[in-house]
Length: 243
Image (cartoon, rainbow, N blue to C red; front, side, top):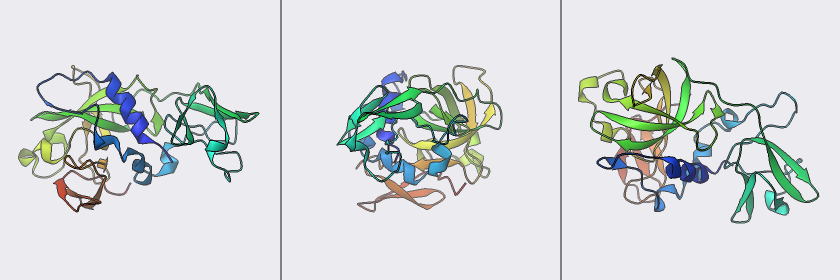
C-alpha cells in the first residue's frame, strides 16, 4: 500500500505559496488518511516497470514487501532509501528494492518521469485556491512519479474545471487545499502559474480528499459531491469518475 501521507508531507515542506489565499496547512489531521489514496487510484498505475528485472520498482511512501510477498516488511531492518513508520518499512526514493542479510534498501532508479506535453495526464496536490484558479503541485506524469522536492507547478482555471456551465464555476466548490487530483495538461508553462491543467473530462478531477473540518477521508457520492466516511458530512468537489 502506498503511504501518501509521506508524499504529502514532503510536498508541503517544499511549497512556497503566497500568504493571502486558502493554503494547505502543514500540520493537522488533513494528512491522517492520505494513504487510503492507494485504494482510489488503481495501484497498477502507480507501479513502474523496470526493464532490467521482473520486480517492480517502488516510489516514495510505498510499503516494501518481501520477495515472496508472504511476510510483512517489518521483518527487515531499514537500509538506504527507506524509512520506518509504525513497524513497517517504506521507500523514501524511487528505485529498486534490494534485500540483503535482513536489511532492505532501495537503489535509486535512473528512470524519470518525462516532461509533460499537451495531452499528458498528471496527478497533483492542490496547494492553494484563489477565486480564478486552483494551484497544483504535480507529483506524477503519465503514471511516473517525480522525485520528491522536484515537483512541477500548474494551475486549474475556473473555465477549465468542467465542460458545462463554465461561467458558474466556483473554484472553492470544486477543489480544496490538500485534495489529490487527476488532470490533463492543456498548455505548457507561459507564466508563473506553470502548466495549465484541465479537469473537464469525466475521469478527471478529485481522486482523494479529506473533509475540511474533520480531516476524515471522504468518499464520492456523485460527480460533484463527497461525504465524510465517518460523520456523513458532505462537501462539494469536482469528482473524478472511473478511468
